[in-house]
Amino acid sequence: MTEARAAAATAATETETGGQAPPPRWNLGDLYRSPDAPELEEDLNWAEAKSESFREAYAERLAKLNGAELGAAIAAYEEIVERLHKATTYAQLVFAGDMSDPERGRFMQTVQERFTDISTITLFFVLELNRIDEDTLKSQLADPAAAHYRPWLRDTRVFKPHQLEDDLEKLFHEKQVTGASAWGRLFDQTMAEARFRVDGTDLTLSDTLNLLNNVDASVRRAGAKALGAGLGDRIGVFTLIANTLAKDKEIEDKWRRYPEPVSHRNLSNMLEDEVVEALVTSIREAYEELSHRYYRLKARWFGDDALDYWNRNAPLPGSDEKRFTWDEAREIVLGAFSRFDPKLAEIAARFFAEGWIDAPPRPGKDPGAFCHPAVPSTHPYVLLNFYGRSRDVTTLAHELGHGVHQVLAAERGALMADTPLTLAETASVFGEMLVFRALLDDQKDPERRRRLLAGKVEDMLNTVVRQIAFHEFERRVHQERRRSELSAERFGDIWMDVQRESLGPALRFDDEYRHFWAYIPHFVRSPFYVYAYAFGDCLVNSLYRVYSEGHAGFEDKFIDMLRAGGTLRHRDLLQPFGLDAGDPRFWRKGLDVIVGYIDELEALSVSSTSWRR
Image 1 (cartoon, rainbow, N blue to C red):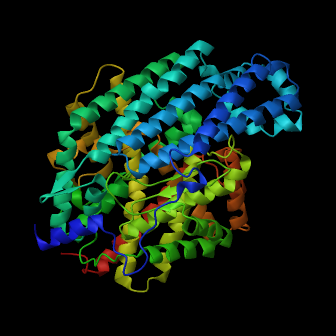
Image 2: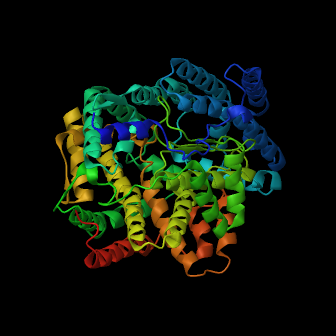
C-alpha cells in the first residue's frame, strides 16, 4: 500500500483529535439503562394494559362523545403513543450503534413486534375518528379540550379517502413487521456487514465514502472503484430488496387508491401535488445553469474538459484539506447559532454537555447521519460519523438544527411535535447556512474563501440537484415496477440516465458507477423522502435572503416557526416572512442564491490560476 493510501486508510478509521477530547458517544440512559432494563418491559406492559382499557372505554363510542370527552380520549391515546415510541426509539438507537450485531438486531425486532401488537389494539381509534361526520366533529371541536388537538385531527383526517375497512387496516398494520420493516432491516444489516477492499484493507461503507473527499486523486479513485465493486458483488440482494419494496408499495397504493407512487408522500408532507411539481420542474429546468455550469468550471480547475465521477466532490487542486478537531467543530457551530439567536446555541449546547451525540466512526455503526426526535418527555439524539472534514462540521450543524427544532416543538406533545419532512429540513439547512456564513466571514485568506464558497456550492448541488435526481430515479423505478420486475441492469440504466441528465456532460462515469444507487438508504426506508431536502434548501435560501435583508423580528418569527411543530402548514408558517411556496417564483428565488454563488466563482476563476493543475 502506498504511503498516501495507508495514511488515508488510517484517517478513515481514526479521527484526528489534535490531542483534544475525542468525539463523544451518546448516553441512552435517559431512555433506558440497557436492553434488559426492567423499566423497558414495565413500559411495554403498561402500554398494553392501558391500550386494552382504552379500547374498552372508547371503541364504537367516539361520535357520541362531547368535546371534553373527546379531548380526554385523545390525551389518553397520546400518553400511550409516547410510552410506546420511547421503547421503539431506544431499540432503534441501540441497533444504529452496531447494525452488524445480531443481538441488537434481535432486540430491535422483538421491541418492534411488541409495538405492532400493542398498537394494533388502539388502531380502532384513528379509524373511528375518520368516520365521524363533519358536523359532529365541528360540534366536538367547540370545546377547548378537543380543539387543542385540531391540527392533529386535521392531519389525520386527510387520509380519510384512502382508509380501508377495519380488518384490512389491521392486516396491513400487523404485516408491517414482516414486510417493509423486515426488508429495511435486511438492507441495514447488509450495508453494516459490507466491507470494501482498498489496496488490501477492508473498510466500512462510511470509511470508504470518506476516501472520496481525500486530497489524493489516487485515493479517491481507489475508494470509488472499491465502492462500486463491493456494491456490484451484492447487487442481486439490493435489486431484490428494491423490487420487493416497490411491489409492496404498489399493492398498498392500489388498495388505498393513490394515483401515483409519490401521492402518499405528498399527502403526509401536507403538500399539494402542484407545489411538489413546481419544485421538481423548477430544479430540472435549472440543471444547465446550476450543476452543468459548475462542473464544467470545476473540470477546468482540474485542468480537464470533464471530471471523473470520483472527483465530483473532490477538494480543489492545491487544497491542504484542513481538519477540524471535535472541540473546534463544537465551537464553530455553537458560535454561529449564538450569533443568530442565543436561544439556539443554548439548546444545541445541551447535546454536547448531556451526552446526546454519537460521533466517532466505527464498524457496524449506521454510516449516515440523523437526529432522532425520540419523544417529548426525553430529548432528541444525534448520530453522525465525524472525520474532521469541513463537511462534517456542516453535517453537525445540520443535525443540531434538527435537534433544536425538535426540542422547541416538543411542547406540542407526542401527536403534534412532528413536522412534515419538507418543513423538518428548515432548521437543519438554516443551521448549515449559519455555519457556512460564519466560516466564510471569518476567513480572510482569498484562496480559502474561494474554496469555502466552492464547497458550499457543491453541498447545495448535492442537496438540490442530486436529491431531485434521486426523486426522478425513484419515480421511474416505481412506475416501471408496476409493469414488471426490474433487472439489476435496468436499475443501473435508470440510475445512469438521471445522473447524466442532472450532472451534465462534464462528468465521466465508469461502469461500476451503475451500482451506486444501491447504497442510498432513503430508497429503502422512506420512499420519496428525498425531494424534502431540495424543498428545505430552496426554502432556506429564500428565508436567509429575507433575514440578510434585515426583516424586522426575523429571529423571533423563526423561533416561533420551529415551536409550531406540526400544527401549521407551510403557507401559514411562511406567511410572516412574506413568502409563499405555492408561487413558482418562490423556488426561483431559492435557486438564484446558488446561481449567484456560481457567478461569483466564475468571476474569481477568471482572475486566478491557483486552482488549476
